[in-house]
Image 1 (cartoon, rainbow, N blue to C red):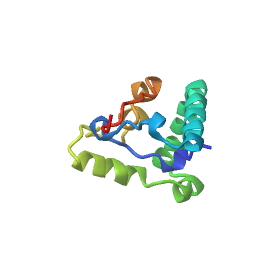
Image 2 (image 1 turned 45 degrees about the vertical axis):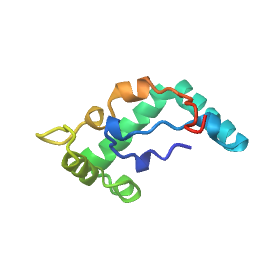
Image 3 (image 1 turned 90 degrees about the horizontal axis):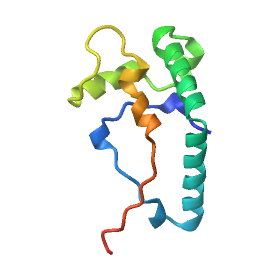
Image 4 (image 1 turned 180 degrees about the vertical axis):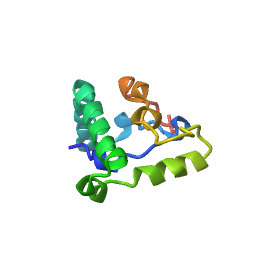
Length: 115
């Protein structure tokens, strides 16, 4: 299950790669299964994220607002962090989660620094 109601904007430069191969076997299998699910269902995930964003930010549907992160506040904090974000009106989902950041999801294994 992907908890889209907990999505947050993260500047590209603040995302760190996770060395999946360095994880314990059970966790490594879980991570690979999650990664494959996300790749196979990317369009549906993006669609649901956009619908949730609409309910939380634009329509202010009480149920979704109650169970979700405060997206407008998170976007304000994102702006304060020094990242270009929309300056006029309400931000769009693409301003917070650029499609290319999901479209280009990849798993990169990196050698540990001890090697």
